[in-house]
Length: 213
Image (tube, rainbow, N blue to C red; front, side, top):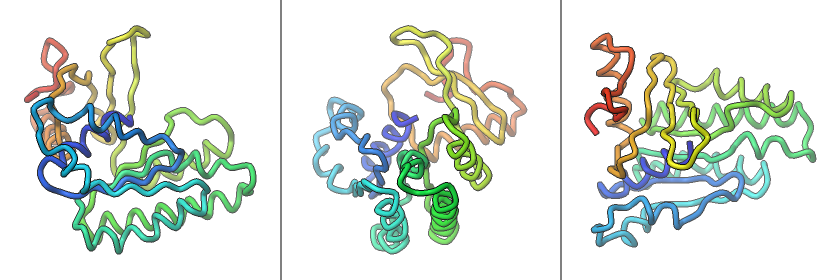
């Protein structure tokens, strides 16, 4: 799901908005953001100056970064925040199961508060399949507190295969287009709402492209 979040970040940056990205597992790669800008974009570096990145190397550092988000978002007016791999940080063997659940509960409370009070979209990137009992518990906590979920499946294990996306709670699903055009998070959500209101079960056209792409 990281590539979709990166595309939404780039789309927001191109409109002159600021974005916050908290890297919870040392997975961020600036080169991927550069590659998602259109080839003719001349202000890439100016746009990237509005991307504020925080890196948490321990679960407690991650918690501190999230606690500071409310103040930072109030200053930048950012419409979008991405928190990458928060669950992975809570799987650290140096902390117990109870502490991991308490820290995750506090993180989700902070996230919900920011999203509600500051009208900011917050994306949490997690693994879809749990790898342990603790992982399953933490994933369930995130799912219960999330208003929307987007999961990815790749039906064909081959290079260039399109990804099948499923959205909850709408139940909509479809293939991610192969075109390089950026789609903002706002337009992606509005498109799903539009499809749902029309009573259509699949937001794809016959060639597999998302409608409006």
